[in-house]
Length: 282
Image (cartoon, rainbow, N blue to C red; front, top):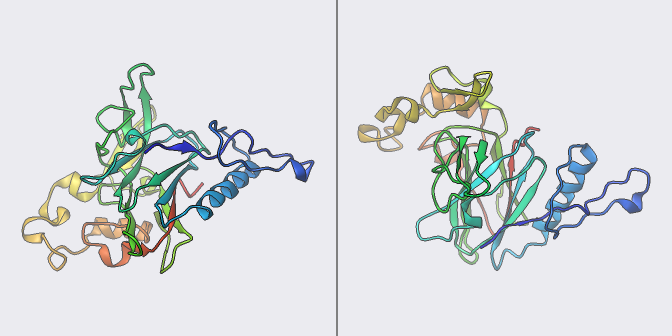
């Protein structure tokens, strides 16, 4: 199943003439644009693609990069499900891609940051969310910490289940919004920049200025059964929120903050298509 750009160089903005304002949603080249009119043009095209999807056959998943930097999305299917778009690709600022999800598909999406790859071999590394040093993850998951968007599509008229998860930590803001579905169909996400409030014991630093580039989960940082919900803490009654998961939840109330945060964080919708936005706060 291959991905395709959904916004192209015919997404024209002409502030002098209204007839020059057009949106093309099926081209093969995507421009990087920064002004607000262009962002509006892209948003209109995204909504058009999602509104015209046919959820009875499969869901459309659109990935939109609102970050001020390039993001390399990673896509990992659940066991036995198809690998989509070779598991990863580059997404420039203000660029969007669409994917057709097969019926019953389940998996996760995350954003890799600070990547550099050899153009000939596709080998390299990412500062956060790396998947084995490859541009194309091909079924591999991302190294934590990484913010995750997770989805399980229902078969036929059954519900989809989806969430944005901080269980593997945080590396960038993400939101997941359904379109044209029925049911509750709320928006999941972490819009706040957790790197700005990340406790010192969870912080991952990098870059030339040694800034915080990601925030580990308490489980990853300390490995304690209490934080990992394992051993004697292996159940919802035994594994309660900690100071760290409460901090995550306070900053991102619509995200899954720890392993047993299910009641408030797993959302449902039927027959929808979905928009995943990187850096929705921008």
